[in-house]
Image (cartoon, rainbow, N blue to C red; front, side, top):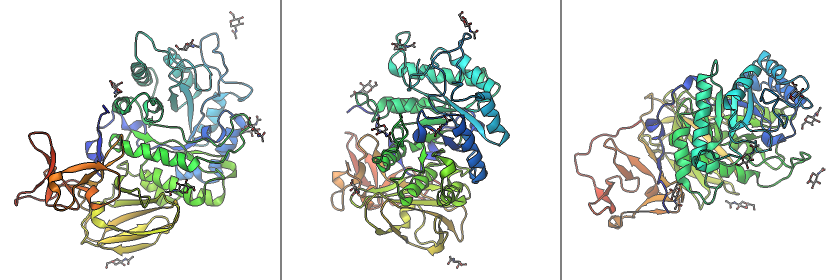
Length: 506
Ligand SMILES: *[C@@H]1O[C@H](CO)[C@@H](O)[C@H](O)[C@H]1NC(C)=O
Ligand SMILES: *[C@@H]1O[C@H](CO)[C@@H](O)[C@H](O)[C@H]1NC(C)=O
Ligand SMILES: *[C@@H]1O[C@H](CO)[C@@H](O)[C@H](O)[C@H]1NC(C)=O
Ligand SMILES: *[C@@H]1O[C@H](CO)[C@@H](O)[C@H](O)[C@H]1NC(C)=O
Ligand SMILES: *[C@@H]1O[C@H](CO)[C@@H](O)[C@H](O)[C@H]1NC(C)=O
Ligand SMILES: *[C@@H]1O[C@H](CO)[C@@H](O)[C@H](O)[C@H]1NC(C)=O
Ligand SMILES: *[C@@H]1O[C@H](CO)[C@@H](O)[C@H](O)[C@H]1NC(C)=O
């Protein structure tokens, strides 16, 4: 398979992330509401007014959920005589300028949706060849945030499908930065149209090529599948099934992309689905915990007026939101995945010098496990205070931390040091092939000449790699050896010479 092999090393992403040109457009991952996954095309003024009122009243705005975004199906099927898009006056009797004012007066920003192709996914007029006029129309209505989807792309001037997307998203970026008083927060769906599940005839090459440019053209990358919607678009009745799997699918796409994220540009694994009756509270909190560990956008798709106090309570948890909105904007990366036990472990740095640990139980049984602290890239002999951000309990740990997780539950801990801030961190994590998702695996003792191979991830020390001050990769199972290639290109694990120096990295 010809693919761009993208090795991702946990903890390293921030160090290699390029900066985007203007992080000030969205200095932190956006938080808010979008109607799509919950209501699809069943949107109207009443829904948005009720949503704004409820977000205010229930404390969601105060917690930071300040964007209210319309998705597809808001326009009339025809442009007006001036070629402008028009809202559907049956759905929005006071109009969208009025609705935008309603949001702004209450402290919300106003988001809207269009399409880079010539029609929206729901067959309303698209913005292809109308980029500037549509941007100016949205500006006139007071729009602050724009999602541009990628359905119905008309290939022009001999451009390939890939080239047409690149041309259109870069054009949108140019229009927003040169033709408007201030650029919208730009949510870009281009990568989703090249993601592994979307076009099975394509390969990851175009997905990563898209990711390479997209962080220079906007603030968000909708990188893969839509989260599975609530139910039937015709009558908005709930259809159970597949929602946990959809969440896990998008999580599995997100972990492939950590190196792209830095403040100002966010990988977007799609909406948080809050009031889906087939999700347990543990599953919903897992969703929120993982997305927050990623510093992902937290865009709720739910009927907000009916959210329960327990829903609001977890969605506004200040400790978890602080991880999402952390000033480093790091996306937590995989330390290890154990496919047999269905346990994933992730970590990242936090701006105050703390270290984060997130542990996901994808399985169906309660599990207790111990995680050696060296897997977090921190000195296992030191003592840390580990705060469980859900239970709010702190305890002092050294060498290892023991965690018990129910079915599909996720734990999240903030490690702080009793003696050293920031905690010294050695880049540590699994190295995986982002196409096969197999893990780089060291040969076992006595078999180093066999070098390394990609194998199913099982969370062993042979699959957790540490980077030293000289940039050399060693497996935790054999720290005295490092990865190298001989003249013939064969990758082996050589023994380090005696003079090896200290440990670098953050
Ligand atoms: C993968 O996609 C790239 C870009 O479209 C193409 O050049 C390459 O031939 C493809 N490889 C395979 C094996 O399909
Ligand atoms: C507005 O949309 C909501 C959600 O789909 C629906 O329940 C309600 O009946 C609609 N109201 C009007 C006035 O169309
Ligand atoms: C739009 O143009 C058509 C045809 O020229 C005309 O009949 C119609 O009155 C115009 N509508 C508006 C709102 O100006
Ligand atoms: C949109 O593009 C498609 C594909 O090229 C084309 O068949 C269709 O006629 C176009 N539709 C509009 C409304 O321009
Ligand atoms: C909603 O629509 C689906 C498919 O059209 C249908 O099977 C279902 O019975 C409808 N449900 C209700 C409550 O009308
Ligand atoms: C958990 O149970 C579901 C439903 O029975 C099953 O589809 C899934 O494969 C199980 N997950 C694991 C990790 O065993
Ligand atoms: C952790 O250890 C420090 C230093 O001994 C102590 O002050 C603190 O109370 C301990 N914290 C917990 C939660 O036990």
